[in-house]
Every structure is written in structure tokens, then in C-alpha cells.
Length: 256
Image (cartoon, rainbow, N blue to C red; front, top):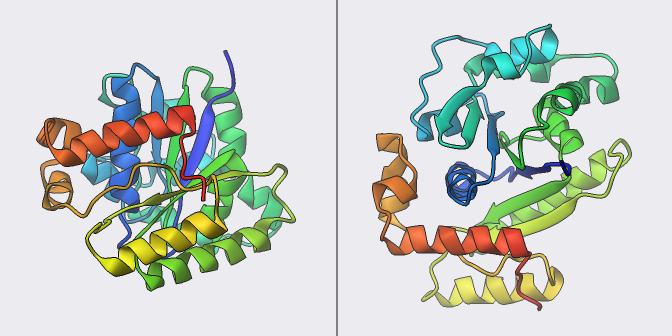
């Protein structure tokens, strides 16, 4: 089997639709018959909640990373062909680890190396930080998806992320393929179009072709523990996510 595409969904700016993106991409890929693992690496556990998974065993992921518990033993079946490794607030303890930064940053990668042969895609929902949890995600990944909003604060968030990646560059052992998704996008706003055009200019072939529009439906989904494909399968939002899955599979982008 070919190596799984391990993708970190990352933006240190909050409110950009990061968990919504991870949740619906993961389920969209599973609907296409890919074997998918979603890893909730955010202590707030919003991905876990968004998939309707009850994590009754506290601190499971951090126990696996810091001890001898296998990832497979803490994996929960969330949907057909979609498994999730849930998070808990105890994950924040990982950011307090001291010692060899590179060694501590390889905890997740080392676990994934021997336990994920059955997956085609592994999506990691990262916390909005730049600490050890994010380092673990980056070292385990071969791709990054950054959701960003169509405003200038979104551009600032992307610039901050680029600085973070630069800081970690010395210990990353491979070049990461980077994608950007415009999320919570308001196509009728002039500012949104200006930001989009600027992104296309400075990040050619990195902006996935489908924009994810601002949507009440997407905001409602987590409260029901459902993805958009379950909550409103015929909606515009569901159609956009189906298209975004195609973008990721075929690497369809804006060309500048």
C-alpha cells in the first residue's frame, strides 16, 4: 500500500473554520471509499464533539504518546471508513514537556509509523498554537492545509503561520506540501475578493479551487454531532465540500 497522505489542518488564528474543515473533509473522503483517520490534537476536543464522539476515557491520546498505549487501542469508529482518535483537555500537558525538542516532537510520528498502514488519509486537527502539539503534527505530516477567512486579519494569520513553519524548518525532515482554503468566504464582499486575488498572486498553485462559503448550516452541524453531509446533504455547503474533496484528490488550485 502506498504511504498515507498525512495532512495537518492548521491556523494559529481562531475562528477560521479549522475544525469544520477537518470534520467535513474527513467524512467527505470516507464517503469516497477512502480509509480515513481523524486525529483530534486540540485540547478543546472540538473535532471529537463535531463528529458526535463521546470520549469517556480521559487523557487517552496523551497517554499513548507518553506511554505504551497503542494508537489503535484508543481509536474509535466514527463513521463507515472514518475512525477518530479523540482528544481531551489533558493534551495540554504535552505542551509543558521539556527536554530534547526534536525527540519530544516525534512522539506522534513514531506512533503513526507502525500503526496506520490501513489508512489512505490521516487528518490532524491542530490547536491554534505554535507549541509542542503543533510540532508533533508537523513532523508527522507530509501536507498542511490552512483555512483562512477573506479579510486582512486572515492574511496576518497566514503570515504568522509562515513564520512558525520557518521556525520549525530546521527540524522538519521533509518539505511539506502546503494548501490554503478560503473558508467562511463571503463572495459578494469586495474585501473578500481583494484578499483572494492577493492570495492567488503570492501563493500560486496553493489555493484550492473551491471556496467554502459562510454558512449557518455549517455553524449548526457541530451542535448535532453531524457533518454537513448528514445534516444537510443537498445544501450548497455540502456541494462545496464535495467539490473541495475533489480539489484535494486532484490537486485543483487557482493558478494566480
